[in-house]
Image 1 (cartoon, rainbow, N blue to C red):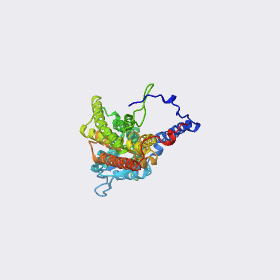
Image 2: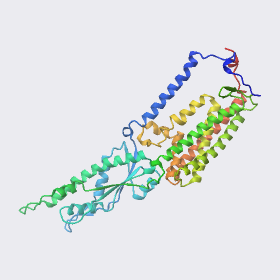
Image 3: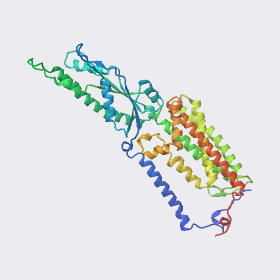
Image 4: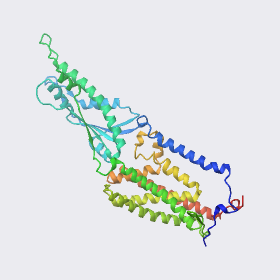
Length: 445
């Protein structure tokens, strides 16, 4: 039978001592400070934090023969450009991977690289034609170097790739321009006793100074409704928040219904009689509620996303993955609450939110954050959830693009939550540690 006594009027009500009054303020201040460090440190200076940022370099240049039949001269300007890029790019910031075109495309499709620099097969031939054509009438075209961005890895990663390409290829433009200008001047140099060399016109000088056509292109552009690559991050955030917050709500309401916690409705205070149920059975009841919630909420999120026009190529896979992630997070959170009680709220907040969001890689790539974020990303739930969601939404569920890691890490988290929750509650039950007020708490102050 429910009781409706007002706790403030109870003679056993305990007054807050200064230490008890100050404790929540200290806890919130410490959490806020940790939150400030984590969130500001990863966004303040991404360029300074840049490390191991993967870019592919593809050199398809076949070279060309610029000599005469008597003195053949085989040249490969593509090799020179590739070597110059490798020497100029800071290896501590950029991981420049020299790959074939097929391997580079595979790594782009699986989100292993953020961009690709492509030197085409006719690069030397076109550069040689440009050198000759700059002083001979006729139509000529500049040799092309293509910078392919990978927009499905995120807008911030694309911006970093474009900035890198602008800086690195500008140096290539300048170096090739100087080399080509010197080569043309050498070819125009007069023979001993011959007529003077013709002067290069201003237009020719300008063409030779900037001989390359640098093209920025998108590799598999994102479809409309993808939020410039942010829908994967926010969908992942929803799955994580629902799993964590949903578990806390389920924990609170079931404990209230079983009489372990009081329930307040406005000015009314209700405390139901304590149900004769073990800790293990209570936890199993909460887990059943979490699983049911996960299925219903995943379906609701799918319907909302579809209604808002968000492109989903694999809806069934996203629904299953979403329900699985919510279940894994919810089970782990309820196990933490069952093990440590109210302090579990703080633990869950630190693990899933304070440490998780900055190390997710969903907005700023891990390679553009301080290195300890990369360490956190090895096990933090948010990063694993994001990789799986991004793979389903943008990379057709490619296992190598993050789905395999997202699934197995979520499965590991679920297993840890199940074993930990059952182990600790069974231990409490065997020790006779029932959920009831301690003798000290029951004694009037």
